[in-house]
Image 1 (cartoon, one colour):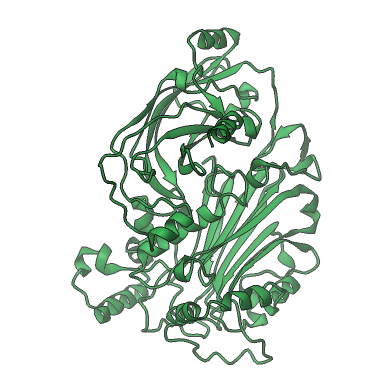
Image 2: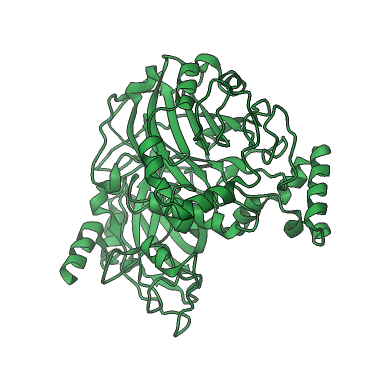
Length: 581
């Protein structure tokens, strides 16, 4: 079944909202899409062609999209792939040491590793002529390739990609992330494949790596005001995330274990297939719960053994150099939790024999989004009141912050053209201390260079806005389609000199809450109490009330009350900033 209509598209603005992507077709299939995501740390050893059959169906079967992310995928090609001698006692330490002493390695990898390699040829030949490469991204030893059926090529547009290097000194590509975003009809899908900092004690570095990837790709993909985890319909996050099983810190009964005892206890749990017990002591799960990294992302159930560190042979023989851990992960996040994206399967691939990591593969079924018809004459207004934001990052170098709100949507431009996006009044929030205490990520200079918040302190004073200081919003859709729209509130710190700092984002689905009148012309209210998310981590709280009303009389009353009279839009805001400078 297909449908043809003039509609809004999710994530179709293109780079920084400066250009629009034209879709090659206005008729899209509404049948569910089948998506395969695959992640593997190749271990710098040549994969065996015959072992692709354990995760990649010959000819692609019924898969519509295939995203293949790999790490440490750089090896000397040989005709003999049976040589699986150990390359490492500590691969990560070796790579980091070499990168630290030889920055020119960066040039080597950039020159020689973007070309099609033996690995790329293996996968392409396995899939056959019915698939094409949507986008191929490489950074040092990391590779991300998104394939799609040739028959769906006319439905795919708005393809964008970017990379982020977070390795040695925060700039080298031995660690980092790769991103590919595409529109399939009315649905915007984003894939992130990454390799994060190694070793159990580098937990904070891994959390920072996640933030860096989202920060460094923010202006390259989609709207410059949003990172890729907060803009698109569906985001898949996968890779060698390097988060470890840690019984000592997350199980009170194991607090006194030494390293040898810790290893023995984990291996005992593996022998008992106590997967749930292992995941309860997983660093990533704990960090998500704390709001420190990838907050809001979902994972499936890991009903299999940890995928690292294993012998380079078929099967799951865990080695003694490391605590066995679920380093290799696949997560996802949807703009609306409406059940359109379902995980069908999640498994490891123990048959693969050439690496000290086992691959992880997951299949999803995705019901495509239907387009929203643009109706400029629709009399719908949205008012906001009681807006209070507390706990924002202490962003200014002199302390405090000057926050303002930008109102965007998914699908994009439901309120206005991107450049005219409504903006609230700018507020002033004083610092809680006269001398802000700045702590470092890895160094203040590098954090500033990356435009990441240097301070770990948060403002205790609350920022508030009156109705006059908040814009009157007019969505250009039918009343029956409002439940498909998400209001995206991006929070920025106004800087007189330099670009404004991103402070976080809040999502407000505009669907009617339970118990509200079901008549399409009846007004309704949405109470909002949400975490502010800054690059996937909690950075404050947002409270307020959203009132949705219908008809010219409601709009007239709002105008008489002065709703939005002290507000602006993005173009006017930028012009004013340029005038000041």
